[in-house]
Length: 69
Image (tube, rainbow, N blue to C red; front, top):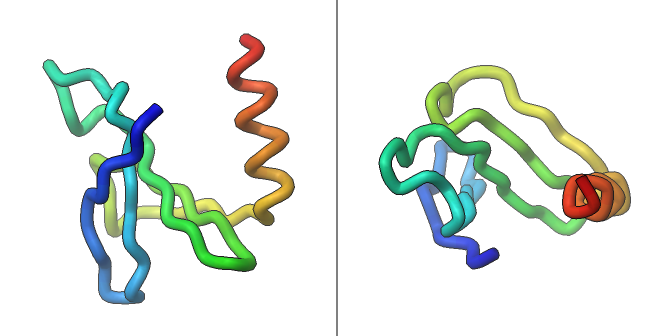
């Protein structure tokens, strides 16, 4: 997976989405912004909508789980 910068929001977070996102519908994707202490996750179609924040270790575990399924 290649990360491509998507946008910087008012909070200063830089959001990324995967280069594997569907090119026919580029808005169908989650976006991720990293800070040293927190991983921020949002829906690319609702960038001002709800966001999920998780610890880096939880994100790493999720990615390992998702890659196995």
